[in-house]
Image (cartoon, rainbow, N blue to C red; front, side, top):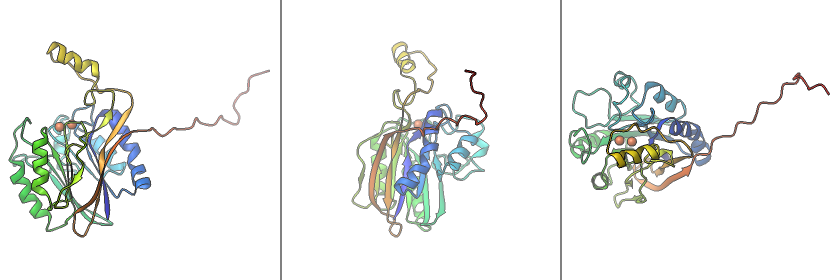
Length: 279
Ligand SMILES: [Fe+2]
Ligand SMILES: [Fe+2]
């Protein structure tokens, strides 16, 4: 059995800090073998930078997926061709920098990860995700049966349809992009684990990770507003999926929705020769 942790869209600095400090804990305390996070909002809520990608990988993340915000930070464009562990949606037209899938060796065998983007209420319209992933899955299954799909899409219908389309051919289909976790975690009849949306790793007192007041101003005034990333307690959202590595089918899916608890750093001990107040 291989245990994969998937975490939803990482929101800015609060989300990054929570993920970076939690990955090792998930591995040691919960036996997670492989970690995937969606990093499309990890740079101030918009896009991802090379440095943030490196920080996430160094923290123990194996693959960073993304979505429509992947292009928001300019320096990521040339970087995509140099770091295959950072994925952009696979159904961008050719030629587009970067890759939409990867196969990595692990002590428990090969793991494939695919990132695909939906088209309903999404900009820009990309190639048909169903046709593109169909070909890709057949190619990947020559290499491994353990295949994890991040479907980055707005509508529940498109994500559920993708899960049903791939049922029995991949290990898990988990949605991202809405930043709101759904409660439909299940294993489909063919053996594919499914969750319509993983949710986000970011401030819980927010609107999808952004400051509540700013978003309300947008809705109240209909004018463009800057939406800062919110502050306060951070929630980690995602799922853990146990997969039979021989068949690639899921055995269990468990939703993750928990507050991040920062590790308390004890105060530095007083120096031995510290001056003592004269009595
Ligand atoms: Fe997002
Ligand atoms: Fe998105």
